[in-house]
Length: 206
Ligand code: GAR
Image (tube, rainbow, N blue to C red; front, side):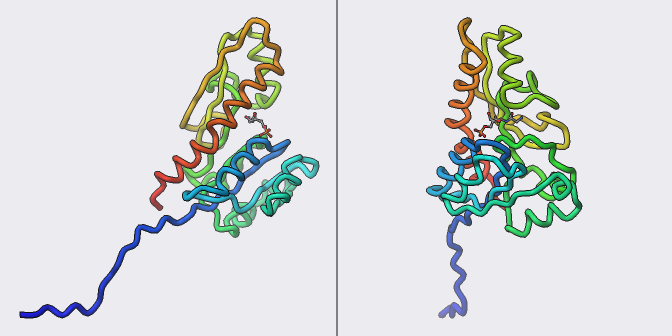
């Protein structure tokens, strides 16, 4: 008795690279770390940078790495079609790396649970409107906190209040100035952000 095999389906375990869009407003040191990290990752790659500040340092740094940059103004950002403009790049995940505007609901809905932000403090402390960059470190310093850190979290339609994915802390010493605190926090951001994003992509089976 013979069984004739007419078709064979081979399921290969081929990992499809997830496509990342980075949103950045400033110097873009985190964005650069992420672009460079994912240049060698089996999980994803950065395909576009969106930037709302025509003078931002990230524009040149992304161009040097052959990553296209889309510069947009507030009206475009708030328009109904902007989520579609992002989706046109076939984006799987959005990474906010020093991006300071509140994400519109249309983008949050389009990329539900696929937008992550990094915040330079241990949320829920030192978050909310106006709490970004040096404002955060100056507040930590004024309050004589002995510890600060970073928070990587999902993005919802309120500032800094989406579910927390990861936190890491560092000490604030009595002699530290806000600039010292900023440097320590940035070091943590550079150490962890890309690897945490990569872990999210790895666990994303869609
Ligand atoms: C980073 O410290 C990031 O955590 C912060 O802006 C800085 C951008 O630095 N983001 C926020 O404050 C968001 N609320 P970079 O441009 O060198 O990456």
